[in-house]
Length: 440
Image (tube, rainbow, N blue to C red):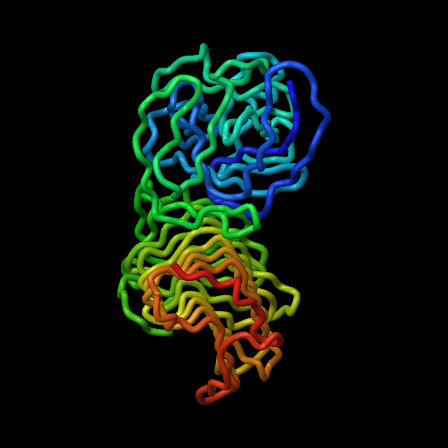
C-alpha cells in the first residue's frame, strides 16, 4: 500500500473538545493498494459513511459499552466532532464517550464500543487516506481497521475491528457536517438520506472555520427547582434542563439563581438549557462548558466569577439563542475562551463587567464562532482596566449592513454606568484582522 498521508485519530462519542488543524506526515511509497495523496481531514464535525453500504456510523444506545453500528443516514447522533488530543485526534458526539476496542483486545472481530475516555492506544485511531475523502480507520492498539461485520449492507449491522485490506466495508467516507447531502459511497453507490443540520462554515485548506454541528435534539427533560452544584465532571446526557418552582419565573432579574453552579475546576458537558433558563450557569473559578446549548437565554447564559488572575474559563462547542441582553458575563478576573460556538438573535456575546464593585484585568479569546443576526455586539471590554480581546475565524450570517459591532471598548467603573470609548480593532485592546471576520 502507498502510505502517503497519515493522521492519528482518537474517536470519541459526544460533546467535546478543542478544534485544531490535523497533523500531516508523509511516508515513502510501498506496493499494494493505491492510497492517493490528499489533504488530511481538518478538525471539525463530520459524518462517517461506510463505502460499502452507504450507511452512517452511530452508536447503538447511550450506555457504557454500547456498540457502534451503521444506520440509515440522516438520523440524530451521526455527527462526530474531530478534534486534536495529545498524540492524535478524537471524534466527539453527544454521548461524550470515546470509541475504542472492547476489552482492549487485539483479535479480529472485537466490537468497537463507546467507553469512558482514557489515555489508551485502544481509543486512538489512525486515519489513512485511500482516495479523496475515503479513509481506512486503523486502531493503534491492535493495528486493525474499523469494519462493518461480514461486509453487511443492513441497517444496525455491528461495527468491529478486522485486519486491514482493500475491502470496501473497511473504508469510510468523511462528509463535513452541514455541507449538504451525504456523498455517494464507493465502490457500490447506495442512495442515502439528506442530512440537514444547521448550516455551518466548511473547513478550508488555509485554516478557515471548522464546521459546526446543527442544534441538537434533547434526549429527555428534567425540571430544576434548586441550583445544581457541580464539582468534577457533570455529563447531562443531552437532556433538556429547565427552571421550575423558584427558578421558573422566566424573567430578567439579576437576582435569579442559576440552574447550574460550577465549583473551581468543574466541567459541565452535554447539556441543553431550555426555557425558563433562570440565570443559566455560574462558574466560581476555572471551569469548562463543553457542548452546552441554551435554547432561550434567561438573564445571562453564563456568568464567570472567581478571584484568581490565572483562572481560565472555556466554552467549547454548543450555542445560544434568544438572548435579549448578554450571553456571557465576565465578572471575575482571568482569561475566557469561546471556541467552536454559535450564537443567534442576541444582544452581546461577551461583556467584561462594566460596573462591578471590584474590577480586574480580563481577557477574552474568540475563535471559530458562527454568529447569526440580529445581534448588537460580539465583545465589550474595559480598556482602562487592561482588558484585551482577540478574535479569529468569526463568521457572521445575515448582517449585510454590518451593524453588529465586533469589539467595543468602554471605560469601566466600580459604581454608576460605564462609558463607551471606541469600537473596532486597535491592535492593543481589540486585536483582530479584517480577514478574521467573514460575512455571509
